Length: 235
Length: 401
Image (spheres, rainbow over the protein chains, first blue to last red):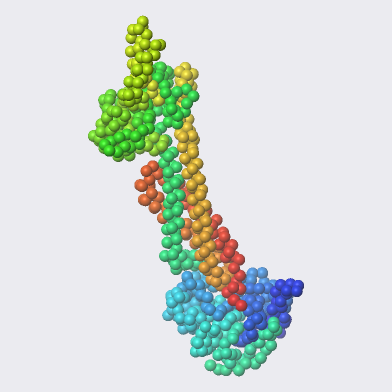
């Protein structure tokens, strides 16, 4: 039975054609329940980024089926017309670097997403400030990104990923530039937010520090995923 | 929705304004070029307006007196004055030359005006200082652009003139300021030879047996006297009586006097369409080149600014920003750059370039409006390359991998 969260069955992605074709994803199966945080690990060139791009509706898979937040978005072809709106409303993104917009202050960096969705500016900013309180960056709400520390920038990026209450968050090595303490703090925040907003979160990582925190880990190798139980260590 | 373009500009306003100032100087030059063209046309119209004439009677088959040389007898005005519909006539001569004053000389259009009173065709219609010419010799009224002052002594050919009045905006179609002197003096100035030349001519005439005929007493003296006087003027200016059609009066003069007559509209066509046509084309070409250069600069600046934001544009696209929002970001920045450039350019043209140009620079409000519209259109078109680059940005760039 397919519920909310993330469900992927037999996802495939082939680049090119003929003799030069490369199967980046051969047979990917994943399930992430609402409120759950799973890790996705694999060596370089294993297909992690391709999987993230396919899940993020940035590239089109060549086969399989994807369901996000209870809605089939891909079944051997896109089932959603407006992929931008899908990304805006259903998927939160976090990157290795925060990639905040340098010419917007912290509040508007986060409030921009609901504004793009047509929510009035005041309401969007109120939502952002509410998130800042939970993420402990409220005092920096009017600062410019260049005035923030690395940890603060990453927390603002988390707020941006959460602001539209998406059912899914895709995080690409969000702790890579952080020290152990800050990396664990970010993972703690993500777990808290996942529980609070019932968001399914996939974290692509190489970071040894945070691997023990996952209850489930997906390995990807040569375009195929394998599931493994994690330690689920409390932190 | 917040203005992304506005925020980006405010974030790096120094760089943006500095770039806009650079562009503005270029726009200032462009506006000045347009102003120079307008000034040339206005100079031509001022020349016609200030002459006070409705018709210009000139030598047959010439485009005189401004575009081509023209000579007609200085008594032709009498017959013209007697024709129906003619209210007033006046002889006039025009000669562009260097007028000396002390150690300097000024290029001026020396205008010989017939005796009369203010309102007589050819006279300066108003003075800003001093009085009109009241004596038949050696007085002058000068345009203030000559730099002459009341009481200055001018030298035209061998004669000296005292400046008794100053006028304003009395210029030739080439922008040279006018100096008005009595008609007789001006006729002499046009044909006056130096003493050696006069002596040589008398010798030649005396040596010619056709002229020096002892059996006809007084013939040689009469011929020599005719050679040293000038009975020609360049044109007769005509004012038409109220209620008469200028073209009908012109037709009548053409028919009966066998002279060429131009109406105001025909003279304007000669000045604008023929006399300054080449200069106007040259200025137009400069305008086109400057517009193309401005477009290229705006396109390059906006393209460079956009390339500097590729990652941000990828993030914006990834988080669901519509293409039109990204297009608006780039286009608004381009237009803002153009607006800054236009304001700086307008200030530069008005405050810096207009006073220092030797020729009259006329910055018409309508030209400014058209210029502003052109700048906005150029900025929009120039942003297309950057917009194409931005729309090609793959949102996957934000994810990497």
